[in-house]
Amino acid sequence: MSIRPVLETRKGTPTLEGAGVHLHRAFGFHDPSELDPFLLFDDFRNEHPADYDKGFPWHPHRGIETITYVLSGEVEHSDSLGNQGALKAGDVQWMTAGSGIMHQEMPRGNSQGQMHGFQLWANLPSDLKMTDPRYQDVEAREIPEITDDDGTHVRVVTGEFWGKRGPVDGIAADPQYLDVSIPAGVKKTLPVDTYRRAFAYVFEGSGAFSDASAPTGVLLEKEVMGAEVNIRDMSGDRTLIRFGTGDEITVQAGEQGLRFLLISGAPLQEPVAWHGPIVMNTRDEIRQAVKDLQNGTFIKPAH
Image 1 (cartoon, one colour):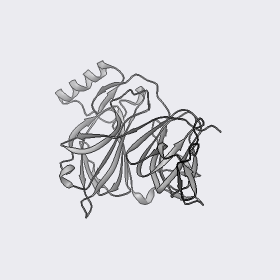
Image 2 (image 1 turned 60 degrees about the horizontal axis):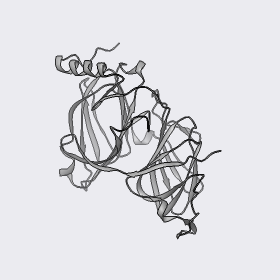
Image 3 (image 1 turned 90 degrees about the vertical axis):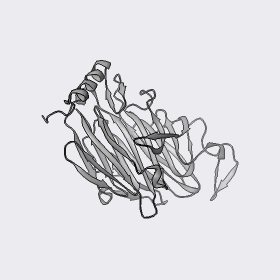
Image 4 (image 1 turned 60 degrees about the vertical axis):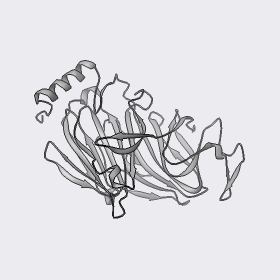
């Protein structure tokens, strides 16, 4: 067994998107090889409706999959194919844009005005860029949850973990998407397939993600619930942790506990051409997508 080294930690960047939604972007429009097959990750979390209620009006997607996970409030959505609905707290929508779709997403806060969710973009391989669009709407009750003996709690959105399989299937990147909560002071090792790119995103509490060269506790600076950790290694709220290769990660939760997403997927290793929410392999394909938008042929008939 080999522990994945931490290649980088970085804070999410405040960003405006849609019609003026305030969010934090952990990565996006960066070097796509870093976290291939993942392209973008946004944390949209607000307590003031004015910061999100204008939402994400009608916009196109092609060549990617978008994964929306709601923790608080809800997201109303509709699209050019006639689909509509609302994602509530704990729900997930995995949308395969494929050949093209127009849709809109409108966040709505809970009774206290709070809204919190995440959106991840996953790339599609070249042979599936123009596949038919597909939705997988998953309600919170459908997502398996596991609690280990030490209190570690995991929701399995997709992929297999500790003998449970998430309800989302048929995804090109064969991803694993986990929502992990670790109690205060607990040190935990979690398996990650060796051949996947992996990252964690902390959104509650803090923790120290260790690696083989600098294990947690080498410099003893603080005692947390009887477990010694190096506070200089602690990753807190809205922090992205990018891992190197290996088949497991190790993390020790801080004094407030820790909750993070652990996401991994098989890299595609294909060229990437960007045009906002349209991601293809070549500039010619991007130009064709823009032409399709202009002449009204962006939405393709189902095969």
